[in-house]
Amino acid sequence: MKRLLVVAYHFPPLAGSSGVQRTLRFVQHLPRHGWEAVVLTCSTRAYDDVKPDLARDIPQGTVVERAFALDAARQLSVGGRYPGWLARPDRWVSWWPGAVLAGRRLIREHRPSAVFSTYPIATAHLIGDSLARASGLPWVADFRDPMAQEGYPADARTWASFSRVEQRVFARAAACTFTAPAAARMYRERYPDSAARIELIENGYDEEMFARVTDVATTCEPLNPGALTLLHSGIVYPDERDPRQFFAALALVKASGAGARVRVRFRAPVHEALLADLARAHGVADMIEVVPHVAYGDALREMLRADALIVLQAANCNEQIPAKLYEYLRARRPLLAFTDSRGDTAATMRASGVTAIASLDSADEIAGLITRFAAGDRAGTIATDEAIACGSRQARAEHLARLLDDITAPRVMARPALTV
Image (cartoon, rainbow, N blue to C red):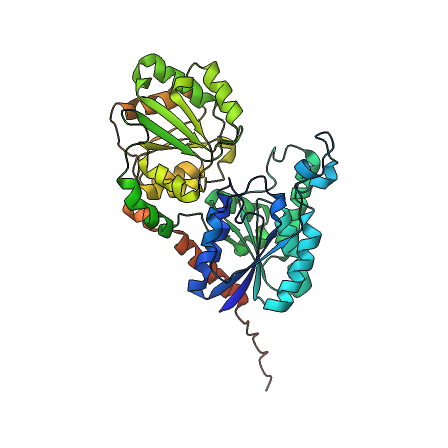
């Protein structure tokens, strides 16, 4: 069994981010493919919210080291303000020094064969780079999504720090992984000399978790008996999942008379005040439910009981795919996507057999899709069995293990030909 040093901010007991699932399920499933994880994460005080439920899925005996880290916005601010340099490349840059010290000790004690660091906390890549340089170990940098993009981050200095992190990664990493085809394509064009080192490893769903909850969920009543409940499970970002036109569409649905039975439930959306303001402004507060975070298994049960699952993804995220989408597909419930038809989210849905897609920028399109669904039209809302089978976290872990095997395989140098 080879060992992998995993550097990740997103790890249990952090709550409220689907990013935890990617790291956790790699740690859980890699041992089946010859790799055991040693986890280097941050102290729990750096997390906004913690919940114990997912910690039970960490394999017994897994080494988890928590290095000192603070959130600059919450723990280093005075009167709500803090120096910008304390948050570049991100608010958890204080994690870097202690994590490098802890990581070097873990490398000495556990002798890993490779290092793996995972974004969207850019400091994780700084730690991965430092440890790869100090140890000489091959390093996989898991970007998931793009870093420095046009207009993101909005702050010029933060954008420049993101760009510098990218350059460090592509100068040293043995492989760079992304979760969406367009993101991988973007970086092959941005760093053509590194194109061969860029790998696509998408997100997925955990079949074992679905197996635990399916029998219970399928015997339960609908979420709102007598009503048609559309569920959005997870964060509603004000820009990346801009809900303004969605709420305008609900007003149109209500005005048409089709909204009498429709309810939209937002599970743990984080930006509750924004949703409440939009609901009041459009006169649809009676159609909206905003409910708090629940344990992961309970969230899956809720998906299995929903009348439909909804995706919100703005055009500025065309190179990204919400991690939640794969769980939606596996749930085999009707799925409605409100996103740009040119993006990777829409492409993934079409490849999965789901064609119920409307533009998130068009209230008319959204209202039309919801109205047709409320009238009983289910065409193009369920994923195919073939698409679902390809999207498991187990398959993604096997893919990562093959990549790790490749970058750690002994390289035999060709001998020069003898001159006779």
